[in-house]
Amino acid sequence: MQEKASYIHLKELGGLELLKAQYHQKQFSKHVHEGYCIGVIEEGAQSFYRTGQLHIAPKGDIILVNADEIHTGSSAVESGWKYRAIYPTPEMLLDAGQDFFTVKNSVPWFPNAVVHDIGLAQQLSLLFDLLEQKYNALLKESMYLSTLARLISRYGRAKLTPAQLPEAQQKIEMIKDLLNSFPEQDYSLTDLAGYVGISPWHFLREFKKYTGLPPHSWLVQARLQKSRQLLKQGMTIANTAQLCGFSDQSHFNRHFKKAMGVTPSQYLNTL
Image (cartoon, rainbow, N blue to C red; front, side, top):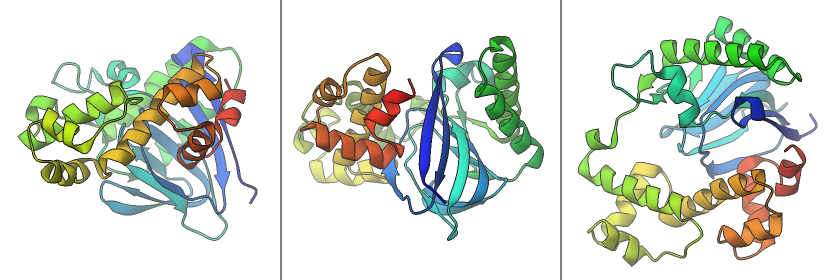
């Protein structure tokens, strides 16, 4: 199987990304996306880490990864895997999920990493087919919202608000917000721990416990999130690397491809 990946950016749906990919030997290291990953395996089978354990998604199954959730990706069979997926942001799912949760302004959380639902998988595939076509904005939006509503109503739960989280996790969320807001800055472990009033060693353990990554690895992911936003705004690759805190363009390219499966220049070609 030839390895290839391409992104389609749907301006009529607020910049929603649609990924078409097929991989044979590709292995994604631990990474996060600012949006959810909602995909369907079309050939082969995928193996991926999510929610603290390894999952296998065979052909026809739906894969679900929550926003800002650490995950990996590799083939579960010798022949590789082929899939399509969309990456709606939490803001995009807010409208679709508002009729299903009693708590106001709740975004969905999907407890299951792999879902076997033939009817919903077929509907997602039809949606992906439609999204690849030009025009038909009204039909696209209608199909998109109805499909998300079906997914959320069956498999979504209301995500806990920060006030409902344990105190230690609330502190980690504060640091995540700081890193996500200003990823280009150079932070020290002592400064981050002091920001939430705990010792550096305790902070290091708690951060990895609640996020799945050490702080320096999370910072790389936050920089990659900012880089995608800047690239979409028309920023050059060299300037993006500099503004996001990467030491050089080569360093930026390497991390970008590990997380996205394409280089920044290939990602730009789809905008």
